[in-house]
Length: 266
Image 1 (cartoon, rainbow, N blue to C red):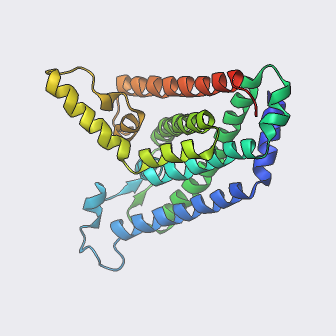
Image 2: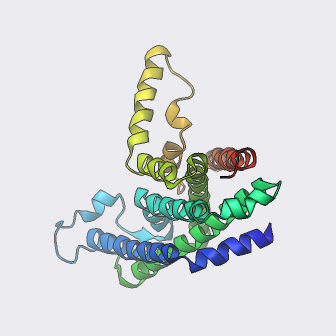
C-alpha cells in the first residue's frame, strides 16, 4: 500500500496538471485576499464604508478566514478538478490494465489512489490558504490573527469536509470510469443546482408531513457543509458534522473500492 501511494505521488508530482492546479489555487488565494481588502478597507472608496456589512464582519481574524477560503464553492470546484484529473489520468494512461489487472486485491490500488489524491489536495489547500492568510495579515488594516487554537479547530473541521467532498468526486469518477462523472458532480454542487433540488424536496416533504424531524437538506452533504457554522458550533453540532463527513467518506471510498474490485479491467 505504501509503495502504491509513493508511486502515485511520484506520478502526481511529474504531471503538468498538478502544477497548473497549484498555480490556479495560488491565484485564487491572491483573489480572495484582494476581495477581502476591497470590502474591509475599501481603499478606493467604492462602498462608502459599507463594504464590510456585505461580508458579515468588520474585522477579519484567523477563524473567519477559514470560512472565507474553505467554505467557498470555487475552492471545491478547483479541488474537484484536481481529483478528477488525477484519477482519470490513471484510466487514460492504461495504468489499471497494466497493474490492477494482474492483482487480485484491486481495491488496494483504489484506496491508495484516493489517499494520494487527498495528499495532493491537502498541499493545494495549504498553498492557497497560506497565501491568502499571509497577505491578509500583512496588508489588511482590519485583520486580527486571534487565538491559534480556534483557527486550527475550524481549519480541521472544514478540512474534513473538503476531504469528504473529494471522496464524493472520486466515487463518481470511478463509477463512470471517466472524468465526466466527477466534473458533472462538481458542477452540480458548486453551481448550487443540487441545493435547488434539495429545497424543492424539502417543500415536498413539508407538504405531506407536518413538522418533519429530518429534511433532505439535513442529509445532502453540500447543505450540511455550507450551513455548518464552525465558529459557534457546540460539541453536539461538531459531533454530528464529523459523523456525517466520515459516513460519506466510508460510503463513497468503500463504494469505489467495491466497484474496482468487481468490474472487469479493460
